[in-house]
Length: 266
Length: 207
Image 1 (tube, chains in turn red, cyan):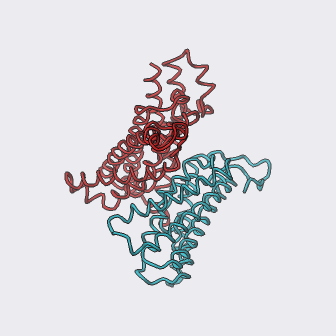
Image 2 (spheres, chains in turn blue, brown; image 1 turned 120 degrees about the vertical axis):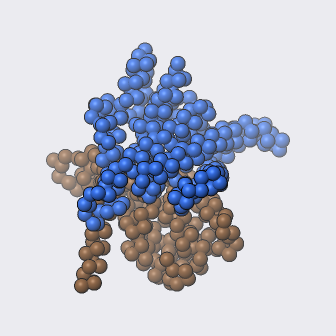
Image 3 (tube, each protein chain N blue to C red; image 1 turned 120 degrees about the horizontal axis):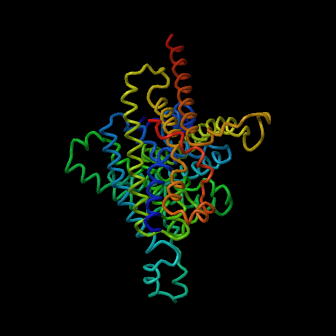
């Protein structure tokens, strides 16, 4: 039960409360660049969700078995060359970033080849933004969050305090990635919907394009702030007996006050 | 952008205002929005970007004849990732508090479009001096943009600048300016202001 609850909290946290785009500002480039039409925005969201899941899976595997201090595979290989104590002390986490960016670049390459083969129309409409998924911060951000929770055993962070304290398994990592991707899709599709309407408005000339998009995004972020506190409430509903420990360890607990105000902002 | 033209000096000046990475090219938005809650974080970020961009540009420029076209982006990102790791470790060692505050945004410099764009546009085509000058110019432009946004947000949001009090005590701190929505709205309005300024100037020169 606790396990399911922690997954659920991570999912809601990633998709709504701590929306990647509107809370952490990652993935802003496609958010502004590809949000002109709803269907393209949706395609972009799906592509990002797909890449983010693959990259998260791979980076969890690498972190857990190779990169983190005294990881099993590294220890085993190093055991052939040095004494067991020295092997146990090997810490490859300095290579984290390089490995992650390599993983992401390869998964984007994979998606690009797939899309080009099976839906050329979509490939054409994405244009330069498809290879640019490599440089989409959202994906690296998800990998980094996972790294933090695998190698240091979590602790702080915004992904529901039920998940903190112990280090994440593959299930938690994947949940964060998939729902983070879904959160990105939600944000970019809403944005595209608003921008389609904005085409009929008389916007002051200097604000046209990116300016008005950013201001609308700000209002959207304001609306999404209304979701803060949903997780605390949910936790209390599902597992009331753990309430005291949860509120004590919960990180962003200034939140319940705003829970009723937003949500209908779109 | 020019194929072989701009001299180092032009590159340097271009980066600061005419091709300002944030206001003109709309690149590197993630750190621009995320770390501008106060001036100190913004300036640390600019310093890190300066270091990474300078080193990456120099290296890219040195190896530009060896690059294979289809692998170049990967080479750029790996080069950048190396220097970002150095910057990250350095910050964690000497400015621990700041490195905690900036959190994931230091490693996210790897995927900062500004750096990849400069490697692609300038460093992979020109010599070392031009690349270095370009890196410094772009970084100063980036730092100016970050400083402008961070000033607005910190002064309105906390009534202080560089953690020094500038507003009277009675100033009601606009908490929303330090929160995410404030970042979006500030950047949107400043962008509009920059565009308006550019438009009115070009209208004047035309007239």
